[in-house]
Image (cartoon, rainbow, N blue to C red; front, side):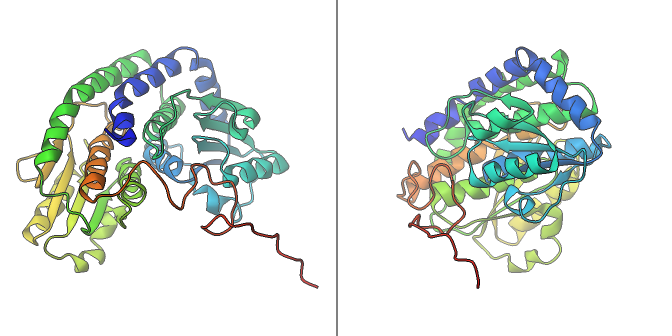
Length: 358
């Protein structure tokens, strides 16, 4: 068994521990962070890599609750933003040590912005320097971000929910029931993957979603790149219909996330039409009809807006299986370090600081 698969299979338990923390020892800090967001005129939500994808899952919660936030990847926010007085930054990072995060903390200090840190590592700069640190002490993944992705997404989701409403015991119990059902579903999902022709080494893969699912489809794309060592594309389902569909060909592979409440009929129509055009479709969602895909993952019942908590798991299982079919090692990185701590190049050679111009 790969380390990647071991990390995937322990996910329901790690997510339950996260919920227990947020309703227990971490409750005061969660409520303090929510109050800081409610009282701020300008709120930024940021991260890098899989942590940025975790941020994407929560963005619709803020917007639907009439609490809009600025969403920007940390590598773009750092050089291309000036923080106004009283700004609050929700900064997400599994290690809290990535170069963009460390430099963003310095920028926040210089501008007087308050930082809410959402991280898995209590010894990282983010946990040490955040005004309100939400530290989710999950066991770190071997390589590809699995538990660190979903536990951070759960925490930002809880923060968004607490900001616009209440992250209460009733919701936590409902999510716990979903996690128990998800754990029971894992074996069946693995059987489906073992029997599917949707997995094709060297195939062309596109991932489509809306709303919170944008985090999941972008995370799937990253897993294809990191684990399968193969290019993939992720984008909004609506945007895909405005030109990109011209490149659809037979045998292309699509993954599409069907939201539990928003734009279901429209996106199911996209899935059906992709199949009519000869593409092979993986669909992930609740209560999917029989014609929704060639590989369909039926999700257990989950609270409205929270499908992202579990809908990445079938894609994780698929990425791990495809890495083995492709004969590549999903447990090692050849170019990317576990934590990116400088901003130069790809090959980690010694880079001299640029000389000032005369």
